[in-house]
Image (cartoon, rainbow, N blue to C red; front, top):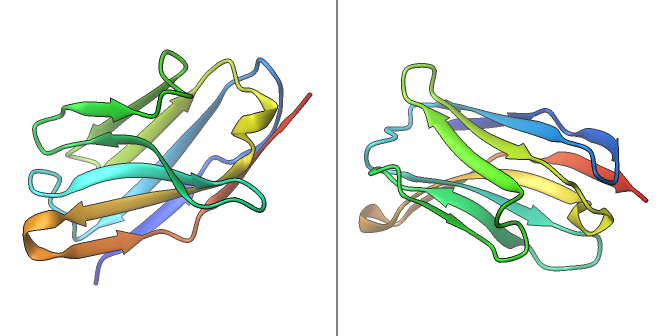
Length: 117
């Protein structure tokens, strides 16, 4: 059974840093695109960053230069390092695994990140 479990959220002051982790079970990092999404209060879920099977990364313009996505194939972990956090980064952050060729799409339950001004 595929499982994605996020951790590392919390409350931080603006300008601070947080590191999110996603523990993945039964996911092949070689064929799945791993990503972090977020859903701010009252808004739609949006893509924050993704990392492909070839380790290519993509970022939303709003987080470029501040956030870094990475993965550890051995430990089956995906990370999101968030620096220079802003109040507008406040959201529930979700770990996602997609395999486009097989129409597979898995989600974690999310972790809350709150940035105070």
